[in-house]
Each structure stands twice: as structure tokens, then as C-alpha cells.
Image 1 (cartoon, rainbow, N blue to C red):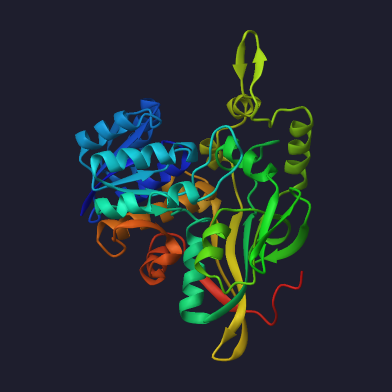
Image 2: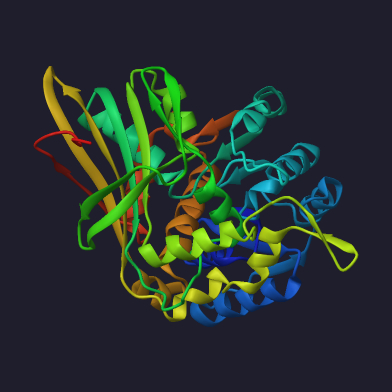
Amino acid sequence: MGNVLVIGAGGVGSVGVHKMAMLPERFENITLASRTLKKCDLIADSVEARFGKRIQTAEIDADDSKATAALIEKTQPDLVVNLALPYQDLAIMDACLMAGVDYLDTANYEPRDEAKFEYHWQWDYQDRFADAGLMALLGSGFDPGVTNVFTAYIRKHLISNMQTLDILDCNGGDHGQAFATNFNPEINIREVTAPARHWHNGAWVETPALSHKQSFDFPEVGARNMYLMYHEELESLSKHYPELTRARFWMTFGDAYLKHLEVLQNIGMTSIEPVLYEGREIVPLQFLKAVLPDPGDLGKTTHGKTCIGNIVSGTQDGAERHVYLYNICDHEACFAEVGSQAVSYTTGVPAMIGAALMLDGTWRQPGVFNLEQLDPDPFMKMLNENGLPWQYVDLDRPLDF
């Protein structure tokens, strides 16, 4: 059993602590901390009402490494699970080093003043964590996270010589809102509006955002338009699997979402450059976040399913093989279980699984790691046991676009 400090009381943080509370044999004591204590207390009340376990709560500004280290020393966790904003990754990693505790997150670091998310800032912590005998596990969400483990599983069991990788992320749910994002609006819009990049023959190929569209028939969802994007797992997967000649990431968007986004871009509301308003500087995108629906509240109205998975082509035992490994998750089932929509669920559950495997020593080793560097089998087993079952099918041919 282990003690954890979870930082972040949004939709993912809520799912994470609910799922931890469902495994008391692995998570003995849980503390949930956030800048807003009231959010933590509401989640704690929900956990107690559903599962009869009372978790502790605390108020913290995670940008303040010294304050976070003091909270760590007070609560004495075996692991800090960072489910806050990616802007805060480095500050929380610093706090873990100060207090001598392991670290886990679900998304790589991103500077506040630049829409650029890369792993090198966190990879640079390798020696500091290794020398301290501590572990940092990066990107234990779904994508990144489960998609990294899917790749490792395919490489270990299904296609020993991988050549091409396509990650397909489809949210076939309908939340009934005119415009809303399924996770933090600020992070979501920065991600969607950034230039697309994919890995091809040992180099990055950059194209304008949302300029490449393909239709794909997703299992249990149906045909949806998906768009080529850059996503952070491409950086680590192309590094750790240099045999890949091509690696791409695709995400689905509806026409109404894209039209709203186009208008918001055209009038400057997606900008991260500060503007002067009534004598003070505000960031338009942060103001937009404040007026959009809270993703944590979307579970009440969302129905439909998500389908996220990997298509890998290559050879196994000298024969050509094409595999599609994926998970399907139902929004309404997620809400019934933990009060959340599936997008938060598919990130919060893998965070819990990564934490469990670190706490019991299965994945525990000093240094900084992405999930594909570790044995995929125990993670894949826990996905099936904790609400994210997976399956795979053999395809007749690789993606022909």
C-alpha cells in the first residue's frame, strides 16, 4: 500500500482520486491539493459518498516549488501525482527533488508564454532524479500514456519490426453545448491551433494546423473526419523506436467545433499575447477559458463513445502485418461510475495505473521515463481490470493515405 499526493482538482484529478479510492489495497492514504480548496472538498465528498473512503484535501499554489515541497513533507506521500496544468510540471518536479519523493504526470511541460510542448525540459532532469534515487514517470494519461504502452505492447508481442505508426483519437460524444472543449480549454485550443508535425524518414515534417483531413470509420462510433496534428508522444516514440519510418497523430473534430474555433481565432480570442484592457493586461485565451463551459461539468450531458488506438504496420517473423489496437469508452458509463465524461476518465484511469505500478515497485526505478520504456504487460492488464478494456484486430493493409 502507498500514500499519494494528487495535485489538480479538475476533471482528470477527480477521476484519478475516485479510481484510487476504488483500490484501497494499493492506495492507503490520498491527499488532493489544488489552488482552490473548495474544488478539492467537493471531490472528496463525492469519493466518500460513492466509495466510503475519506480523502484528505489541501490548498496549494503548485507554481511555488518551496510551498509544494513543504506540503509534501507535511503529508509524507510515497508519490506525487501531478494532474494540474502542464505549465507547472517543472515546478512540481523541483518540489519532488527538494522533498525526496517520486513524481508522475500526464502531459509534458509547456511554457505559459509560448505554445510549444516538448519533452527536453523534463528529460533534462534525468541525472538529478537518478542521482537522488527517485523516479519521474512522464505522460501517464491516454495520449500520451496508453498510446505509448499500446506501441510497446505491439512491439513486444505483435510486430517486432515496426515501420509506420498512426495514433487515432476519436471523441464521438455529444455534450449538447454550442462550443466547449473536453479538457482544459486553454491547453486544448493551444494544442489544436499549433502547426501539425509528423515524423518521416528521420525528420520532422511541419504543415499548417488542420490542413490535412481524412475520414476514418471508427469502431462503435462510425465515420468521422480526423485531422493531422502534432502530439507529444510522437517525440518520445520516435526517439525510443528509431526503426519507425513514419509516425503520425490524428484527432477528430466536428464541423461546428472548427467553425467556432475559426471565428475565435479571427477575432483574436485564441491569442496568448497579453492585451491591455481597462488598465490591466489580460491574455485573451485565458479570458476565453473563463467564459467557456467547465469540462468537468460536461459529464452530466455527454453521451456517445470515444475510440482511441494505434495502427502499426511492419513485419513479424518475416511476414508483413498490420494491427489496429484500440480502446472504446462510453461517456455515460463513465459518468455513472465516477461522475465524469470519458475524456477525463481516459486520462485519469491511466494516471492511477501508472501510480499503482510505481507504488508496488513493478515500474519503480531511478530516473526519468516515458511509458514505452517500461514493460507494457502489467499496465495492459490493469487497463482491462479498471474500466479501459482494449482489443486489437489484424488489418488487410496499412493506412493508404
